[in-house]
Length: 277
Length: 278
Image (cartoon, rainbow over all chains, first blue to last red):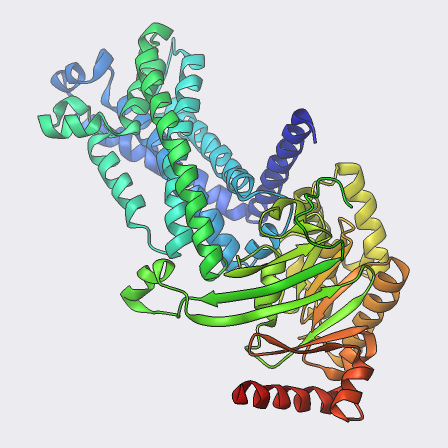
């Protein structure tokens, strides 16, 4: 099989995964309406919280001098990408185990790496839509107006973030493959990232040791870059440090995660527990 | 020899199993479950199984619960790794060439409910066909042909959760043969079917798939009558070992029994006694 044909097949499979998940999700139309409304309440909560805490001092503390609502909304919306990256891969395995499709998938001519990647496409696409809904509500009702945003830069930050987060996600999936449920590593990463990553407050307000920890957390660079691109309209040269840091995380984490995942997979094929619930 | 085969010293039989051994770690619960992936495998499921299946042949695996039938199928289907020994399907080593092996077989188990129940049968088949590298045109044509062949055309556009057990089984078989594999691995395919549906299913396997299309069939069953009806040869498994491997009539002759239902337990008992003496 030639390389382009192989790429074409893989892409067709990724589309098949997306269509599968889209069709299943569209069978639950009520959930879509509820989620859209839930996003409204989330945005409204941030808006009124920001009105309560807003002050000139706070605005000065926020990079770019933006209002707290815009700062928190971007943090809230994009922190979700880390959450989805950490859950999408292992959820795909867990769900396939639960609905007994994992065995049927594993005997097809599709490698598990493609099964994992394909299963993550719809959750990421749905999250991108949810981000738009957040921003839409913010724009329509609460004065969120990212005028002069560097949208291409924001897209680049998003792609680099997803690559960096994917490494963490595959590591998380390795845990699920080996031990089935409960994933303390996932919650540790989410907890630490939530604390030091700058989702709700700037990293600069943290004590020195936590600021040091923040440097080793990819979401720090993701949120920093995203806010710079969307809220300050930062130019490419200002975004490169964030993009570069995220790509370094990706280059380190993705190969490690695939080595760990392959090892975990082999272990479960030896113990015969891969498809056990 | 199929393209891509590395001849690893194994014959070109449809299925070739040589001295296959499989040990599992003992099951553990509570906090010990965290250590299970690293515990030494001591529980023997297969203790050196060897047999082969010729192209176009229909071979049954018989044995009591715990004999190792499902373990054998799962190794052949590349779902688990053996502890020792070798196995090949159409010349593809199932361990060293797992990806190539998966082109050679279709796999279906009797307890197979592995479908996306909120999707239609057609959407499920299309998805799994795409996973087996069929193009969009091939998928439509194959679904039409296979559903006609298996008799599921009318149920194709219903959500799988609304289908009967028998129809879901047929859908499982359709999924297994959609990519036209030369070998079919069926683990207790009629397990939860009523006698009429099971009879239909057997006819479909023997007359249509094996005789008409030349598919090689390896299946397991607890029903001696079913095995006698469709199998060319039978592997009797007892505690992970091959107690006998021959045609149903010769197994009956060997045991001095009128049918397989009486012959199989008799031969297994003799095998156990011989093993105990050894």
